[in-house]
Length: 160
Image (cartoon, rainbow, N blue to C red):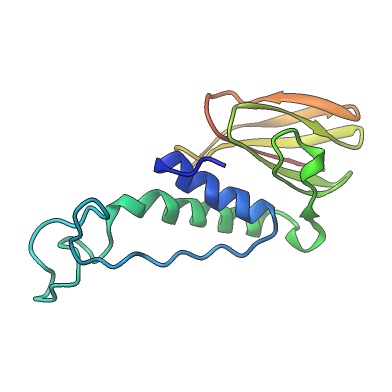
């Protein structure tokens, strides 16, 4: 896992979600704290404990966004029938109902996925931009290499 910076925040959320964990995040204290947060400006509503803008430290916006993205996928996929099956992907992060659907996170743009042969609808999601980048159909065998149409961390959803 990447452990620092924006990529680390996003990876932490996706990796935990695909391991079947509930993901929660509590904002750190929003009192200006040199080196620990990015709170700047005058206190909000006279409260010295709040950041000037909206009470939230913008340093953590990416983790908030990634949690929202995983919620979107939790609603899209048939989550109740999927289980963590990390050994199916060389990325090490996969929720699957084999033969029906697979959700994979990779810290790089390519990986190999063990699937049941068939034709699947795919969706590439770029967690760095919070955008679905490409959709379509693909026919796969029992092991298939995938490369995202963008660089960096990637999410692939295959489903029938």
